[in-house]
Length: 146
Ligand SMILES: [Zn+2]
Image (tube, rainbow, N blue to C red):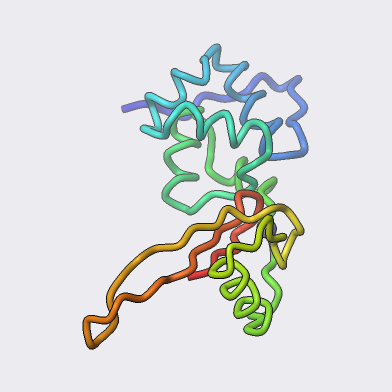
């Protein structure tokens, strides 16, 4: 069983999740690969967290990461920032869906104005008729068009 290890008392913890994860990893003398192996996250994901692309974690993921870094999950949680979603804006979603189907791009995310990653998925309706489903997600916030 891996245990919590006390941090050096002189350490001042970094103020963001990205910096703090990198800092704790350094303190534990681990590479991103080491953390990836211990958490079973991809190394890319560790990189994303350390560069601030991912700014909050699910409670399962938080526990895994905290365990890998030998700290209490609360040390990560206290610096997570969860993007607050605007109330569902159906009109915006409909517009985005329409734009995707029309092949208009790039499309800006309604929450954070980053560019959305869009795709069209082919499927079948109740009568077996072919239907196109527009899909989009934002790499910078939790926005998803389903
Ligand atoms: Zn966004």
